Amino acid sequence: MGGRLILEQLFPGIEADLLNAGATVVDWSGTIAPLTPVASGSYFGTNYNVHYYSRDLLEWSIRRRVLASPQIRCLQQQEVTSLLADESHTVVIGVQTRGRSQNAAAEESLYADLIIDAGGRYSRAPKWLEALGYTPPQETTVNSLVRYVSRYYTCPSDRTPDWQVMLTETASRGCVIARVEGNRWLATITGVAGDYPPLEEEPLLDFVRSLPSSQAYQFIDTAVPISPVWGYQHTENRLRHYESLSSRPEQFIVLGDAACILNPQHSQGITVAAQSAKVLDRCLHTYSQTTTHRDPAGFALYFQQELAKNNTAPWLLATNRDFRYRTTQGEKPQWSPLLHWYLDRLTMLAAHDAKAHGILFAVTQLLKPPGILFRPRLVAKVLQQHFGAGNR
Image (cartoon, rainbow, N blue to C red; front, side, top):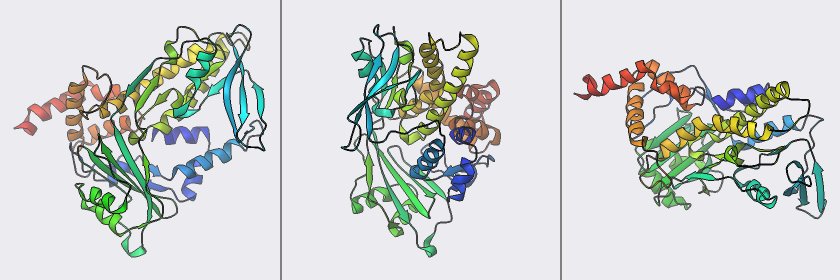
């Protein structure tokens, strides 16, 4: 939900375009009855709608709007091979590119006042900085060893489910099925630490059959597959600490997945990338008002520090959930078991307490900071439920 609101701010009217293209509108908490190891049952409505559509539709919609600007030029079949710096290697002044096809220019030097790496999970910025003589950023990694497969389906008109989204999971297996544009349904099936969903048809169906809700199995058994089964295994969380570099060149910054990678199972990535754009916008405005015109000194550090602050909350949300798995790799915070205990009981409370549910929903949808989960009144309610009548 947080990402959806930012996208509409960045691209006014994009929400209407997505809905006109067939996006599904769902009140996640009001129309979905999750079956999880912690709590099950129908939740309260929130008056917040979540939109479901394919990544293809979203990226096409954004690309079309971006390239409509006459100020933007897109170089296709080109890749950046290195950063270009001044003689002292203290300021990045451009990038060196290389063509990926015979029709593209073999090599080209591009110059700019600010170089932004939004290269995603496979960003090569650490190596580029190292080539200029800088120490690459330290990394923090938390890997829950989650793997998932996805597949598109269509439903005969007489077998269309009476739900738009379905979620079911056990301690190590899960499945989400959601309706997207074009009368298609996207099923994503997950497994943890070697208990992975197979790519083959019949074994995959048996895997889904083991889940708590028979609706997932019934849907996949009767729906018509219209795509291959795609597998994905790069689900680790990874923070690259550009804000902590002892030295850095000016006029070069890193954002989005290139700086903070989150387990895609938690559906935070696009929202956090959109937040990165908002942080950049805010930093550019703030910096231009407090420094000499076109003075780049210090901006890279300022931006990376502000971005790191923004990424703290989604990082904690993602890794806290991943540390529920005993096989998760990475340094576990000492307070993690206590936090899990509290959040489990808050989830139970939210199943029958509208106010608690609204707060929990706002945090998980990246609308509010996690700190509001620990307001004294809410903590008191959780403890009263556990030690009071709810624990007798």
